[in-house]
Image (cartoon, rainbow, N blue to C red):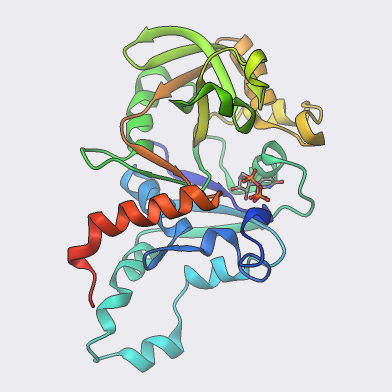
Length: 278
Ligand code: UTP
């Protein structure tokens, strides 16, 4: 059973400036809920109860969000508005939040390594909250991946088919299909030009990692963009046959881009509009 979920949330979110000048990107709301709360709820559904968040300067709002606001509680207690806090209260009750800071932005691999002290010596999930996922027809994506982990006990990356011209925005994998929707990864490239991409299967922001990844990241040299890339560390693991790619069931929105954010807003509005109050 995987208990811990790591949220690398130290990035600057420059694509959302000026909104992200004083507010973390992870706190941008889709309808009434910040992106990171959707990620935490997906992790809870998958069975996690420890949320390990890697933050950076200017991210204090994330800690405050997953804490009780006594003033607010006092103000709305007994009023018709109290129920607005029900969902976040449930989240706070169900899990423990731990935090550390990534002191320098040296890439996603480095952010994950910065979270090492928050992770016990066991497998853990990773959620990039700006990839917002939903499966209207069943289990969430992390829950699907946890099922797979029980069977294979190795690193798993969630992948989806993309338009080949977008390969330079993603880590791209190649591998052999070992069961329906599951590939054994034998190649991975970070943000390749379309002509160099080994397939059209892109890694999205959901991973299950085994703790031996930390030593591998420590030995990983800066790659694309001068950053320590998790894709490069995972390629090392893949060479030892320790990485699977999973074509998940459900939808994923790239809320790190304005277009994906608007798409997600429209999707969740259609889905939730009957539950929203005027
Ligand atoms: P992005 O590539 O989306 O970068 O990071 P970003 O800084 O958040 O956003 P832009 O491109 O400037 O608009 C992918 C994920 O990895 C985390 C980010 O917080 C995001 O969840 N990350 C990235 C870190 O935590 N640390 C890093 O050094 C880099």
